[in-house]
Length: 189
Image (cartoon, rainbow, N blue to C red; front, side):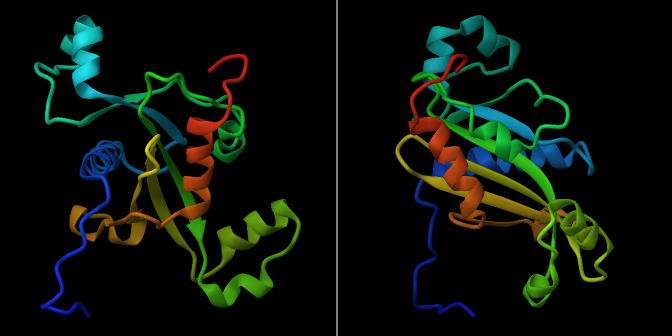
């Protein structure tokens, strides 16, 4: 329960929060059972100044709010490669201010933790067959400045008013995304 005398906590980076929520709404329009997606977040004013043709093609007709981000979806992941694995080999060029990822996963209640098999294949089967499983779509975004923001949508509550958002909802995924912005570029950034 919230205290009416306490101010409502705002996200640490409202531009990142807006970009994450924009991505979540866009992906939600495509329905469920989607592959993982990866987005570069670029400063909208810089995009308009440096790539006017691309900005026009994306129907961006001005620099937007100061510090706003434009999400640019990247090519799909190689077939069979998990997003978490792919993120370990990604490094973004300096022109990318942040990045975001979208994944769908099965989640289990905490009381199921002790029963999950150690074998990854068996664990996946266990999760798919568990009666209390929930399907969730997670959108996580980060910036070079260290900000993070997430949005979660449960398939069982698939409406815009039920989206849960906050700064640290998917810490493991956020850590992987932060590493792509701060590690040395590999052969193909």
